Image (cartoon, rainbow, N blue to C red; front, side):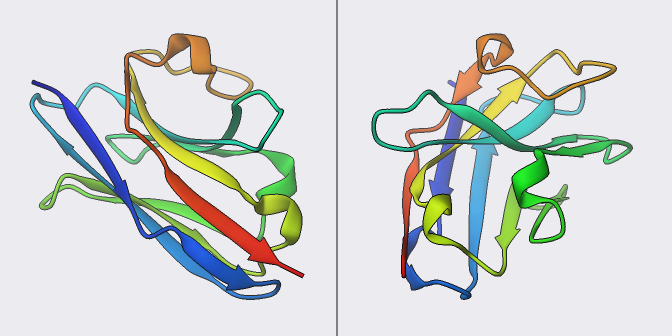
Length: 126
């Protein structure tokens, strides 16, 4: 049974940092792309960052470039999202997902994700 379990969310002031982690289990993810998405109240789920399990390619959405960093730890089967210089508009539920697809250009699509975690809430106060 595939499981993606997110952790690390919480309340932080604007300008602060949080580190999210996604623990993956239940199958081999060596041929998968892992992505972080977020969904704010009343909005659609949107792509934040993605990484091939091989680590050979990384993508970010423009609003987080230079502030967020995605990484993985093969020994622990985890994918992390380091979030710095957080802004109130980063407030959302953050989801970890896994996809067998990796677009040559453009972001990962939520429609292409094969597995999802249940999400972790990030709240950034002004």
